Length: 318
Image 1 (cartoon, rainbow, N blue to C red):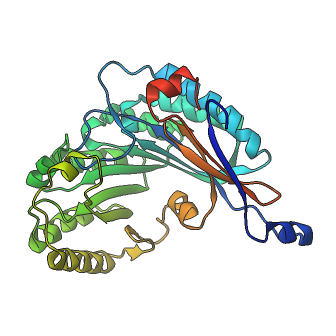
Image 2: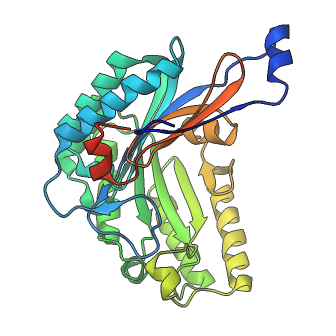
Image 3: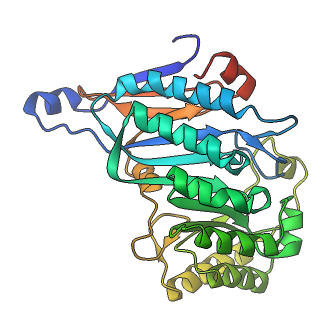
């Protein structure tokens, strides 16, 4: 184990015989990029995210990401990246110029797939409309908006920094900027949420006409404020009713459920997330990111990076 990286290697069952017989093929390859800063940490969030207290040094972090990738690519020489996912944190805190420099540097370092999917997460409350055309021009072709709810009371209970109007505006401006592929993250089982409230909330999201909706239950994760001081949540019977009615509403609106919490219209499935579900390979760069790569001889190598952004930057990535 090196100073900068955690590393585990394990041979896939039957790999030696598969290699000898020429049957072993490497799975598709994706790239995950973690941008760890946010405006304010939500009380339910257990992701590796850190409230922005001072100005962001975009250049230093992009430099670290690209240095990180130059090390990672040694594991995947000759293979092409089929999808990229920029998650957080709140990646939309970065300027279009910063995202453009990042993606340009990645394209110089590795091989893109012919029809690469590049997703970026964005918070409707931290998404400057003037940046959207720049993100699209930089190469981002799929936008994932962290709406969570369109009910103002629910948004307040979740500690979100945006309101329903900002979600609607973000979707409209994203479409105007040329984003044809948009996902909305929506949650159910929210504090004091009734089945009727959940139905109205999801209907409002469907009315915005995204191609993809991620619809997942609020869970109380350890070491979060909600876990330490739980809000009043729907009981199991109501949760089951909310989940069933939600799945049916999405089906009637033309969405197909293809993962536990993922619903897509035809042609709108997230290829990046599907690669995870199908045990594909992925590189992970950024603070707290991790990756899994299958070598030609069937060895699965897993790597993870320093979690705190200051530690990550001090190591110049990794």
